[in-house]
Structure formats: structure tokens, C-alpha cells
Image (cartoon, rainbow, N blue to C red; front, side):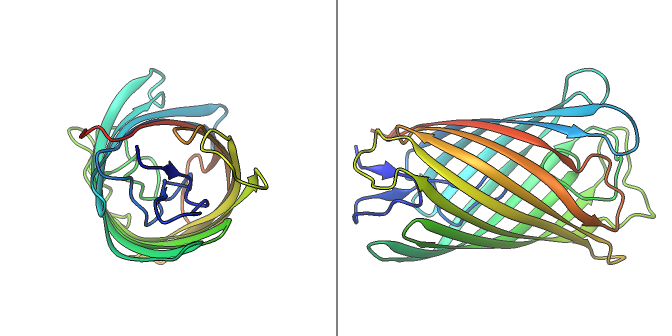
Length: 268
């Protein structure tokens, strides 16, 4: 099996990078023939009433080629007071530039997502990852230098009707631009010696959106703590906090727990 470790740890030409950030994708892909299973969960505080809403997103990821990977995700929520499946999405990412060095790399990728959702449309924020039917397309750049990774993305997102019962409101903007900026650092171990070591990463992400029809926007900050266990299992614990918003958002703040496991070299 080829050595596959965290994106921070490129100590030989054989090592390939894993996915890193919690709220945004890096420009790196999973290796060819690699299957990832992830369970994302969030508990978000309601802004206009008491209580919390819970979302669960089981996800399957597969590396088709070193430059191409796909995700499929289901959306499960308790917003209707029962835990129900509200829809799902298909995501693809194509890496078109890769400049590698011994302890650094720079990568760029294009991505697209199409989602279907049957829940009520309850806010101005457009989010095809769990709330809106529609599509998103954009690009990502990621720079790795030793133990620090920096990533940024920009995308266009458009919402459509949530079939079968919820038409998109005529008075709301149905398209937006999204932008993210993420920084992460490996904090443990200080000296890397084995793939069996548990890696601990800290990161912070800035997540923003501007509605194209009226210019309303928001910006969130999301610090995270991440554990990579034996280079195959991953646990993310994060908190997302709204810094400002000029649009209606029903539950912008809350905690996230994501768990992922990777199966390597399935094609063999």
C-alpha cells in the first residue's frame, strides 16, 4: 500500500495528501481507488425561537482518478419535529493544477454540486448542502508549506424550488456568491515518525456569502480541532459563529461533529 497521510505531512515524494478542512474542501483529492465514509452532525441554536435543530449528513466519497473525486450525501433533519430524510446531493471535484515540492505543494481545482431538498424554505441564506435544492460551482486553491495549509474558494450558487411543496419565494434572491478562507496547522506530533501516530490539527475558517440580487451578506468564523488516527480515521470537532449578517438566517451558530474513515486501494 502506498503511504497516505495528512495534507500537512509531505515528507517524501511517495506521500499523498488527504482532505483536511472541516467546512470547506481543499483542492487536493483522495487517491485513486480510495473510498471514504463520513458522518457529519450539527446542533444549531434557533435564532427566533427556543431550542435547537439537528442535522445529520451521511456521506460516501470515492477517488475515481488522482484528479477526480465524487461525493454523495443524504440530508436528515429534525426541523419538522421528526427525524426525516429531506434530500441529498452529488458533488464532484476536478484538480487541474498540481505543483509539488518536497515539503510543499500548490493545487487548484474546480467543483460542482447538485442538490435536491423537500424541506420548507425558511431563510434568505442559500445553502444547497442541506437546505435548498439547486446547484453550486466554483474553484479552490490550496497551499501547503511544511505544517501549515492555507485554502481559499469562490463559488456561484443558485437555489430552485424545493419540490414537491415549496416554491422559492419570488421576493428573495435565488443566487449568491460564496467565499471561504481556511488556515490549519499540525500541532502534534512535533516530530513525525510513523503513519500510526495520531495527528492533531487546529484550524480556523472564514465562511461568507453575498446575495447577488440585493447585496445582503454574512460572514462566519469556525475554529476546529481535528484528530487523524492511524492515517485512516478522522474526528472533527468545530464551532461556527456568525460575525455579522444582513440577511435572515434561522440558525447560524452551533457545534459540528464529523467522523470519517478511509478504505485505501479498493481497485486492487
